[in-house]
Length: 493
Image (tube, rainbow, N blue to C red; front, side, top):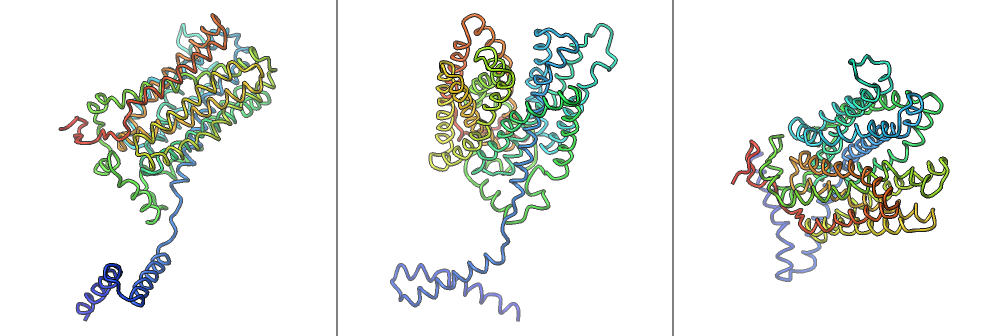
């Protein structure tokens, strides 16, 4: 009986589905069309009733990534804020403190590619958990460095340097693996927005750090600021490990409706479709990656993104106090302005990047956002350097770094465009070069400022910024680095 009844609904459904086409082409009566439209409306209503609303786990994952990025910048900036107390207690010279501060950047830059590769190989959830535990432990260890036994001949400043170096080693894995999580969770149409959300953590961390670290150091001693940051990191690592997964398919709280949204956006062309063939981590196609002009232009252009940014991380407060004549209190207040600009403009840039891709295509859409963001950043940076009014100068300079991060989400999204499965390795290469620019920036800025003046130093930073959109002429986000890639990482055909 069941076998006889089965074909009837199927045939009936077929007839109902074909009626509208016949009606349109042959001009059947409006009653027939009304019956067909009514049947379709009823079917749509039943589907809407049966299918639950999509869950929002992907946005909670994005929020966790924002907290992780915020923490990395709090831990990155804490020594520069608490450094005055350390310098006074141990009588370190300015040159010695500069050397200690450089330890983080060195470890951070060297271990970008290993951290990104490990995420591609072992999964970003596990790597981010391990990295947070690692850097949080060494952040807390910084507080007890003076009490630790040291090898004969090792100075206290060298011990601080090593602690900062090891924090940088851990944090190196953060952004490349966050980018890989975005690749899996956001899909093709939300890559810019997903990256901009976690990059917003740069602004949040930079805004919170001065008040938080200064308060802890002032009321409880500089050691307390490192202990608190270490504990915060361990708590966040636990939350991440318990809640996050590498892919939405693995998460128990993602319902079919949300999974369909994510998976549907992976079915575009180019790298997105190719990537779907490789669900499990394997070795990156290094020959293909290293022979790609788009990759090298992406990497070199990110140097031009990192160089001006590190002026804000290292010299901006001193510039406000020594050059613009603000008091220490005023400098602390206005020093948060660039990071507030990042909070506002970074997510806007990511959202517009995705919109531009939907209208102009992946290559032209990504290029347009870099051209807009970095050109605006260069013009604002040069204008702020020459502004006579201090408040106007601060606002212009803050807008410059805001538009820099407006464009930054497009760099990270393009890493996913080129290779979704191995975006951790490509973004790590890119971020290595960006931090090379960051390492050179405070040194060269100080040299130019001493020899020719601060206006010229900022003008040079504006020229470096302007080089980025020029290099992006040669970046093609439509390129598929995984096409014909061999499982062992070879280039294939």
